[in-house]
Image (cartoon, rainbow, N blue to C red; front, side, top):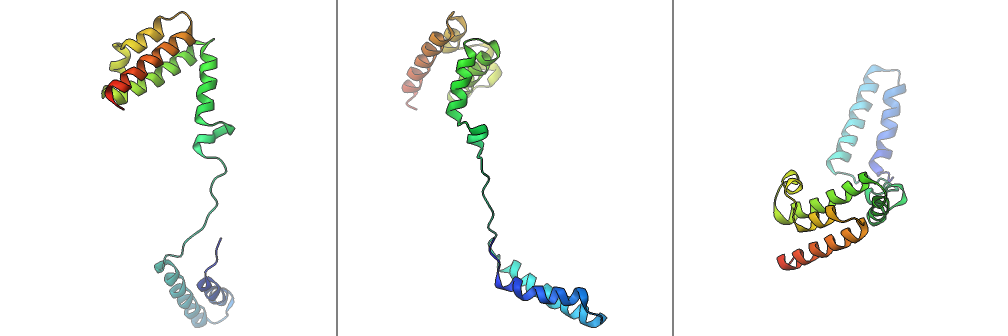
Length: 141
């Protein structure tokens, strides 16, 4: 943290205001310290602070990509992870088609039907992502 020179000037007046025996001296030093501190805030002294060690992308030491990869690995075995992967794909279509999440989920397009009907999840996911890629190329995104 950077200390501005005006803070150094205000500290003695704050000490006098705290420990002086005369009432008038206390008020006078408090007013002087107040003016100095007001000058600090008027000039908008930059306050430096430490950045957080972890950003949102690197929560628990994993990047967004690593979290998605681990979710896909879990999706091979469990239904909850499969629904999360499906929700991610629906989120992509939500942006592409300007439709609502529930609307896309109730009336799935070709990629979602392939993903839902496939016996092997990874193969179905690969085919669904290929369809998604082709549709994005057609839209020129």
